View (tube, rainbow, N blue to C red):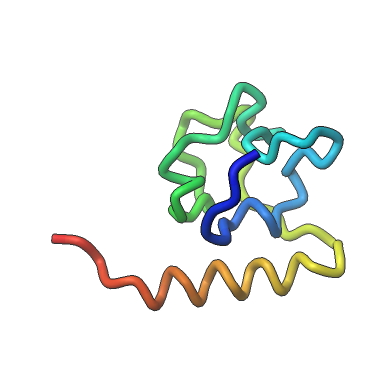
Amino acid sequence: MTIGPPVQCLACKRLRHDTADIERCDAYPAGIPRDILGGAAHNEPRGDEVGGRVFKMAGTPGAQVALEAWEALRHSVAPRA
């Protein structure tokens, strides 16, 4: 497992917590796409996820903190031209 910037996945109910690999979830059982791991939102179906599954807030204590960290990072990084 690599440690990087906060991603929306860390606050998602669909993230597979039964493995040490945070790069898998119910929407992407073969591996979460790099753009999502890089900070892209997954709030709307993109067409490449299983069953149209998108972000769904987890009910864990750290989920809100993780989501706030991800949102703060997204809003602090200027878009690239």
